[in-house]
Length: 128
Ligand code: TYD
Image (cartoon, rainbow, N blue to C red):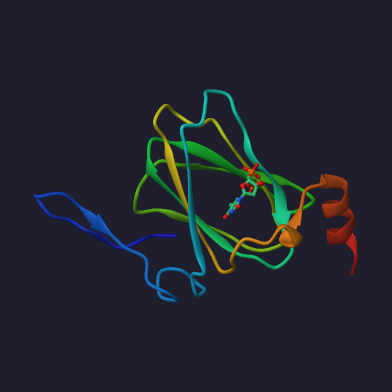
């Protein structure tokens, strides 16, 4: 997902606006930073919540798994967002030093949104 990038010799500028760059209305923003080398964040799916993830600084990988196969998305640009739909298992790894991950979500935090058990996730996905 390409995010607008306003090129300027004084420094570039990018932005999100509800439902134009991001395909939902933003209810929450959080960021992940100071991740020690080798650590993994995430490792869960959301029942109905959607997110967009951007690397504002440094780089990291987002691994998305639909219950059948997984795909790795390397994020290292401030103008590229990764849309993560609901019911997709995801984790984040390979954080570089000083990396900063920005995440916008369509819902406020609610632990009931989380599926933290991979087998439970796969079982739910395989239900018709
Ligand atoms: P969590 O989403 O479980 O992070 P990870 O999957 O990377 O381990 O969040 C870690 C903790 O932070 C958890 O106890 C809930 C809390 N938290 C909030 O209170 N608000 C938020 O918006 C988020 C994302 C997490």
